[in-house]
Image (cartoon, rainbow, N blue to C red; front, side, top):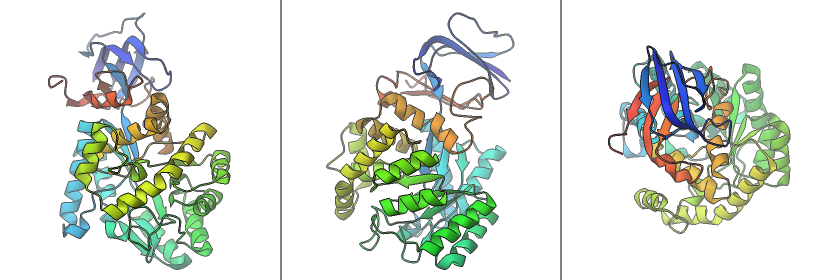
Length: 403
């Protein structure tokens, strides 16, 4: 199949300047040619889509997601799994999210949907699966339903081997507490003992599995980087040594600003206010988030200015809205729209190990693309003006008539 997208304003996530009058030729799901306005594409035998000057860019990614927390409601495993699949498909068609990295999902439902999407049974984003997140007895966010409690070095080793057996792509370790939890689950507290940490990281290294490390304190961040974590999630409390270590080791940082920033006292634009109203977080959790927000913002800004590798992950739901909210928070906290967009496209794909296939619009790459009605480099919320979503060159969502 050959498709030619013409009359596009191209944001390829390589060059920071939009290219007007561009065309992109897609053959069998891959980008075959990218031309500027000075050259006309060969449209022979092609399905031609005139974008009318709209903005064409790589699809968005969210590299820290979870299914909805439905276990406490009494929902069965089947009901939870079906709901997760629906949310993932919505993220693609309603939010333009073409790739996600899971940070914990009960019953390996992320593995199931990864396989379903890869087989073509259903149309959804590319899923990088974690299975359960691993923590200690009395560890972080047990009420989510997505945690597996482990104790002792061999307890972690056995759980990691079981995760691998069930088809995960990476291992998620919750090394500290967090913002969202009971009184004994605090983000500045480290949960794993040194021998547990070393055993967990050692077996991951031996088996060639990357570690996604939930680390909210400076102590935990430094330990995770030293032991070879692929990414640090959250980093609410850090120090300069953490920033220097991440930069020196090439460790990714996924700040998940939404966790500390989306409260009634902090919500700014109409989308944030609507989310906060619908979410109805308990007052004590809002207080915990508000108390952590300023320092979280400080370390986000320092990591950004220091050149730490960073990618965009939200850690909130619904998935069709989450990445868009997180993008807005990046810009509110001092990132340029270009930096935020790269974090949600090129850098996110690189973090997931598929930067040679996805994340930019270049010949040879898979054509997972979106089209929006206005320039997101002028205003990041223009990504909400979604017109088209393409997966491997096939249109899977078309909102042009509604627009």
